[in-house]
Amino acid sequence: MTTDRDGGEVQTTQKRAESQPPRNVTPRAETSTPATSTDGTSNQPPVTEGETLRLDIEDVGDQGDGLARVDPGYVVFVPDTEIGQQPLVRIETVRENFAFAEVVEE
Image 1 (cartoon, helix red, strand yellow):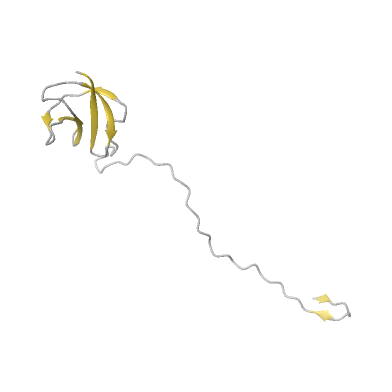
Image 2 (image 1 turned 180 degrees about the horizontal axis):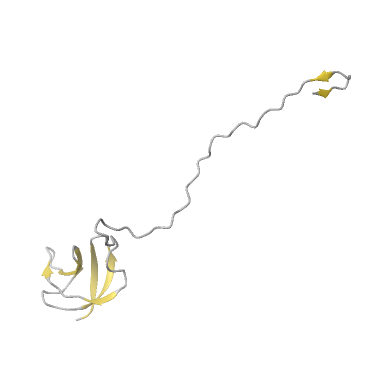
């Protein structure tokens, strides 16, 4: 209770702070860990862009590019190569299941 200017008592009420609805909060970025498949192996490509390595051309694709397998199920396409060649290549483009490379040295 408080007293007004004329000496009368005035009852005041305190307004409680209303709970505010939650704001649209963006969750913090979590540290990502490499995805793994059910057998415990990494789902990350086994090569990286710019990497240089020697590959064994095992097959020729529909477009005439040489094919080299780096891991089971992962293919690197190498233009202007033939079966049996083992060129030194630089990985140019990496995708989930395949990559493109160019010959650096035959």
